[in-house]
Image (cartoon, rainbow, N blue to C red):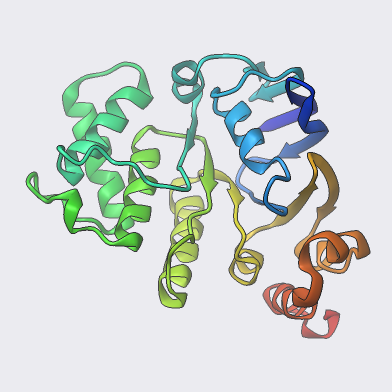
Length: 256
């Protein structure tokens, strides 16, 4: 579905992403991890059109999208959530999602956007009443609203940016289950940036690890958490826990 080759992003003399290549197959969930400043958000910003690449290619379903503006990319079928939700607080929950659906699809009627919003709200479990206020949502509700808005745009590929941030343990498990459900029931392929390793490893099919803008590892969760370079730059003292989590998720506890 997505093929990225030789992706580079420079800001003046600083290279934020340096010659990164990867593929995403239709129907899979790819986890994207790395320390702060490793280039994860910059890659998302290039995939979604916020930043043009300095070099490299981004092929989505065989078509080059690198450097296209955000509205062209979202209309082509790539939706995204944001780490810090910023809803339109003067609009209701439903209106926020309708607006996303209308913008993201690029064409169609208000009634089609309304239908898309209803389906998205039902998927994430948010109220559909026309006057339900955004102000009543806590951290978990705002994360659900981010997902609903992205789903309403009709994506084939979803870029999920730290969907677990600010949530408690129970809410994290619910959010992870939601991503599984989005993939299974809606057939949406997902790239998931996340810092909470224990939960991510239970959900993703593969993991890619960045450090200082470079890809340092890629593979199955059990393979990545056993990579000495990953342990050195990212996992550190949490390596044992992460390995156990990845092994349990793969159904092979002895692998840890």
